[in-house]
Length: 283
Image (cartoon, rainbow, N blue to C red; front, side, top):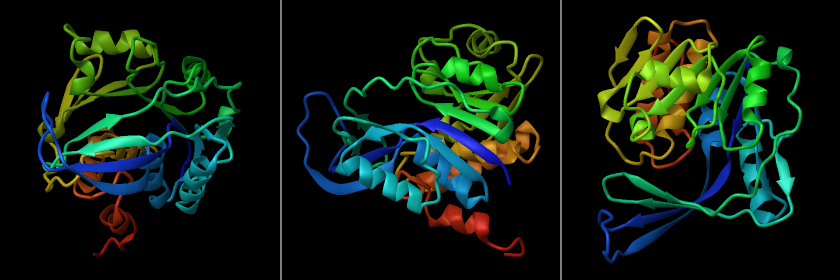
């Protein structure tokens, strides 16, 4: 399959399960769900490993016991962590506050600045996926455009992300895009942009191109935990794009992966996705 480089966070998530939905000024009881591997690097990368791809991760963790645990967990799942940087300091846990309906709120500490080194030789990779706030991402993606597929998540700020495919959720767009969505995306991704994919939960997703748009419905599933659904969608999309499938087929695969993710009580992909990817076609 493909050689894929992921530039994304990898975390130790601590799950707090609330007894009722969040509201301002409320009082809540919680159950401590313990620690689990998470972050976009794991949530996206593990499914791609199960799909047969070789996945290398660029991220950073602290040079401490929690950092060691994260790398051990990720490596056990088949992710190549040799490019993960260690910083001197504590790897803080991410708090995932989960309500009974499966919706989650993320509380995280301020991360140390992650400044990327010189980019690798892109000829060795088939795809680059970025979902990080690291400094220097635009230089990496620009240098990769002529050698491999570049897929990026929309940044939380206005930084440019030169890429072929830009992904955003409808909530990422709130207050930021009040006009033409393609023009907005081109300002972020540049002239190399081929598709701007906007996901909208149970309403599906729309891919915008310069002259057209394609809507693909969501795959219905019983929602257990929405954490990692967007990451799983991106992974399914990348999986099919690396097989030279069209954007509509790739979005349909992304929708299937996202459905498996929301039906699984974890951040990283669950066994249903693994079975789907590894079962004989006759099943």
